[in-house]
Amino acid sequence: MLKPYIPLLLVLGFVVANAIMMWGVSTLADLLLRSNRPTEVKRQPYESGMPVLGEAGERFSVKYYLVTILFIVFDIEAVFMIPWAAGFAQMKDIAGLLLIEMLLFMLILVVGYIYVWKRGAFEWD
Image 1: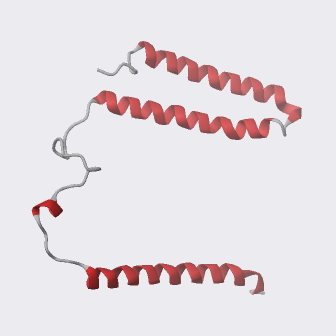
Image 2: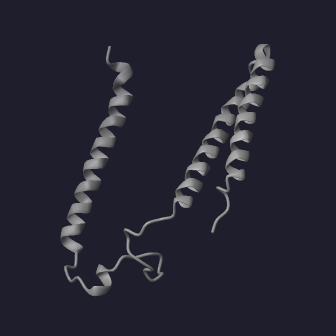
Image 3: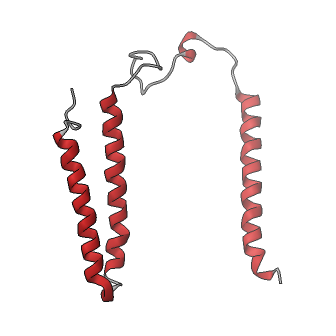
């Protein structure tokens, strides 16, 4: 009865053992190799070799968040189109309905894109 589950239990056991081993090795390496000599250079934040330009809690412009949200929205919409395109060829009996549905979806996207374009959301100061 449990025979089909043996491969799954082996993989699960390997994952748990691997996680425990990685945690143990990293803890052991931290204890053995750590140098506890903090200097001013070690305390500074590392930002790709560039000097720090300001405080970490500095406020961003609302335009930054607006552009970010618009990117996420249009990116997710593109992700919805990929499975639709893959399944479109397989569903020949309702292909007309699927095409009208996608054209309506894209029309809504275009209207939203034109709206944010006319409102000046893509203009960066």
